[in-house]
Length: 254
Length: 254
DNA sequence: CCATCTTTGTGCACGCGTTCACAAAGACAT
DNA sequence: ATGTCTTTGTGAACGCGTGCACAAAGATGG
Ligand SMILES: NC(=O)c1ccc[n+]([C@@H]2O[C@H](COP(=O)([O-])OP(=O)(O)OC[C@H]3O[C@@H](n4cnc5c(N)ncnc54)[C@H](O)[C@@H]3O)[C@@H](O)[C@H]2O)c1
Ligand SMILES: NC(=O)c1ccc[n+]([C@@H]2O[C@H](COP(=O)([O-])OP(=O)(O)OC[C@H]3O[C@@H](n4cnc5c(N)ncnc54)[C@H](O)[C@@H]3O)[C@@H](O)[C@H]2O)c1
Image (cartoon, rainbow over all chains, first blue to last red; front, side):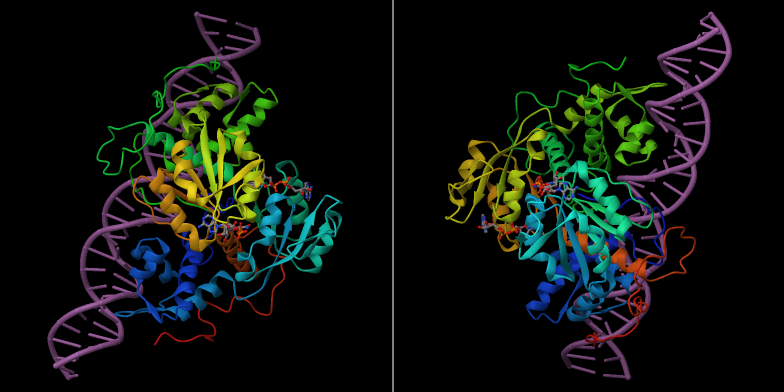
């Protein structure tokens, strides 16, 4: 997983486990597609397949929202779309600011998937004076000096950080101080925030490293027990997987 | 979490839990920073703070790699950097292709964090003939027709999909057929792949929806038990949180 | 009204991940 | 050499998430 919320051990106020919340958007997307095709009802089996999850898990997830299904028939698509949207808070409008309008920030600003749900890009903010006033995706970039005013005037509670890593914590602090209570961080840094502020992170580099780990695994071990997959068609390098204690070219601990 | 690997229930071949693998890059980043500051050793407590995790968890994570610490002193920074790099497979070179060079794909191509670890952008691929040959981040875009040849010639095993959702599954199928066994998917779709292929996804829209859920929670419930956080400074809308069965404006199931 | 068939909702067991707490290991000073 | 002090490595308990399996609910047809 590319992200993770920061510490909130067992505060699950009333209901809905975190793992379920993370899947609701998945269900919602599948349901929206069905809705556009005017499909009236869907069984847990079908919907689960579309969302790529286990059907029992899906049913349990929905049971946290209430009993919205009809036995022998399935779930009413439109009704579920509404219920999940409401549960996720998508029936209201969420103004979002993007800070750091570089390569990534500009791509995010141009992203259509933003507005498709209740999210609206309220402002683009950058520290570069050369960018100030320049329109990106039809929205003029504003200078960091006005950050606090923008947050407060537009009552923004969600901020996206797309600045270099070095500036991320500072930007984060200013956002939080101005009233932002949810942050989506693309910079490769651990942000520290006060209690009550949620941080989720997206880290491309971490994702690739996790893939590399498994990729390396695939190259080694042919003798793993009962693997019915395709162990061929991989390119075994020289002699990868030299055991967990092969050579020791680096410094020794002591 | 923005992503998640696809089904591999309890295959954990020999050692290292998935949750630990996902944290290794975090440790590595913190350790690299220490290394650049020429810090020789670090305690689990310090490193855990830098990585934003619990120190016991960090020690247990490291225990899966072997006993690389010295009691009373801590961990040797350089040595750990090497061990984790090797475990993650970063001591070798990983050629990566990016498919779909639009807003996002171009931003990814320009991203410096790619090469910083062992990842190298081997090729940029797009279906738009108008893009073919045009350099992005110094690399000329190649046409989708040559996808199979590129994958095979460069022995690419990791692919990044940044095409529109509608094309993602098709692109995925071609990548897999050509020999790619790890995919990082930015398109908002569930990809289905054969066993032995790893998929991780990054979905901005899902992240925002999860944040919105918690944001909505913060606006409601003042009376939640023992919350020492800052329940003030939020803008309570009209009367959000109308119970799980408040009004029912949408269609009824039956 | 009854029988049958489909599909939900959930009790239950199991495994993974997290965290506490502490014994043992080793550095360091005397 | 011995004692003290720091910090690791891990045993054990706990909670969360997952998935099986099934009883109950309700639709549908006769
Ligand atoms: N480009 C990618 O695909 C990608 C992928 C993953 C992560 N990231 C991360 O996202 C961040 C941005 O990447 P990028 O490629 O867009 O970098 P970039 O250099 O193109 O853009 C950074 C922008 O942030 C602005 N900025 C710098 N300091 C600021 C401050 N204090 N306040 C406001 N704005 C400030 C700069 O003016 C610049 O416009 C980096 O942390 C990068 O590591 C990028
Ligand atoms: N832009 C973002 O910030 C962002 C954020 C999250 C997710 N996404 C997702 O990432 C994907 C790309 O977003 P974008 O904004 O870059 O879109 P885009 O339209 O700018 O770029 C898409 C590119 O893919 C190419 N393409 C289309 N079909 C293809 C095919 N079959 N093979 C190869 N290339 C093909 C197009 O020519 C185009 O260059 C979308 O699925 C989007 O939902 C984008």
